[in-house]
Image (cartoon, rainbow, N blue to C red; front, side, top):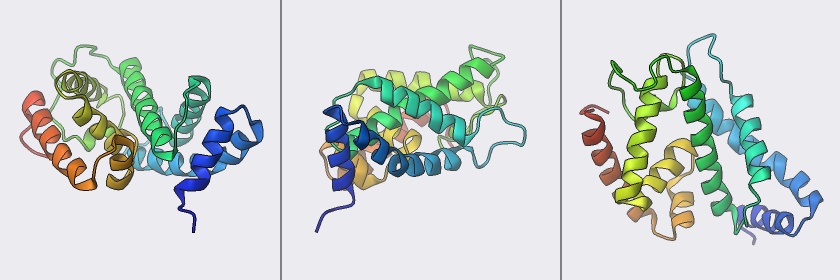
Length: 189
């Protein structure tokens, strides 16, 4: 019996081989998952926000189609999608930030940082800078945070993308979150 990931992997491989029909078949499958992720991020957004789930997903699709990545499998695609969604959220925060340096920003949890509004733009930028610093110290921990929080991947999907066990993902996530709390000066989560 084929796993749910297998058809996606097959479509990605066919797309990589310039099969336009594969891209057309893949889009609805991936679109729904990415839309769910975007809705989760933006659910707590204040009314009147300037970034919606549809915009996030459409921009992510445009960037992913133009990425010309050698998609290996579903996990690889979702890992890259996580990175693209992070960039979209950070770019949006930068555009809406009245204080580019984040001076006077309040402390928020990692989960709260995913709700992008003009009020939280500085915090998202601070989080992005901290993740960049974490990447320099431990790239895998940074990628795991990115996949779980910005990409909405499960522990299992993240483990598959990183080639490690879900237990390792959990352990790395705990250490990465502790590092970020220290780095951001945020003791509460």
